[in-house]
Length: 240
Picture (tube, rainbow, N blue to C red):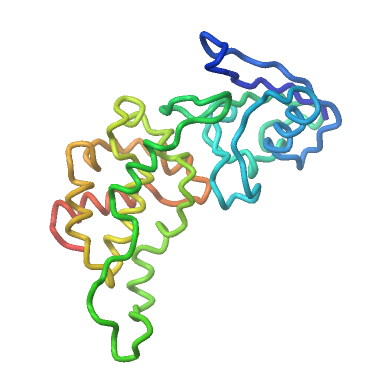
C-alpha cells in the first residue's frame, strides 16, 4: 500500500508559524499503525521530525495525536482503519489541540497535569487499618461504582477534544474530572468533599456542555460524559 502522510510541523527556533510536511511511504501494510509510519518518516526520510511516544501498546498514553481530524493514539490506530482502499491511504497528523506546541507533534502537557494534580488523584484515608491489618475491603458493587474511570491513561485525548477547554484553558477538563470521579465514588476514600469543592469551582464540571467529544475520543472507551454527569449529580444532591 502507498500512503501519503501530511504532518503538521513547527520548530519554534526557526519557524514563524506551523507548516505541513508532505511524505510518501511505499510498501505500507494495512496492519501498520500511524506510529509505525511516523517512525519510518523519522528514521528513513527526515530525522528532524519530533514526536512523543513510549510503550507503543496503548498503555502510556504519550502518543495521543489528532489523526484525520479526530483524537487517537498513534500506536493503536491501524492504517486500515483510515482507508477503504487496499492500495492507497492519505493520512493527516497534527498535535492535539488546546495546548502549546513545543515542537512538531509534541505539546506542553504541564498545564494538563496541573489540572490532574488539583483533584487530589490519590487515595486518602488516615484512619487505622482494619483488624486484619492489611487492607480496606470493598464489595464488588462498590468497586463497580467507579471501575470505568480507573482505566484512564492520562493521554489527554478527551480534554484536548473538548470545545470548553479550547475556549478556556482554565477549565479543569474531562480527564481531571474522570480522575476525581475515581476517588469521589470510592467508599474507602475520605476526601470526597475536598474533591467536590475543586470540581465544583467556576472552571470545574459546570463548564461541560455535554457534547460527548470526550467519550468519543477516549481510546480506553471510558464513558467520560457519564462520569462528569455523575459528579454533577453528587454536587447537586450532596450524595455519593
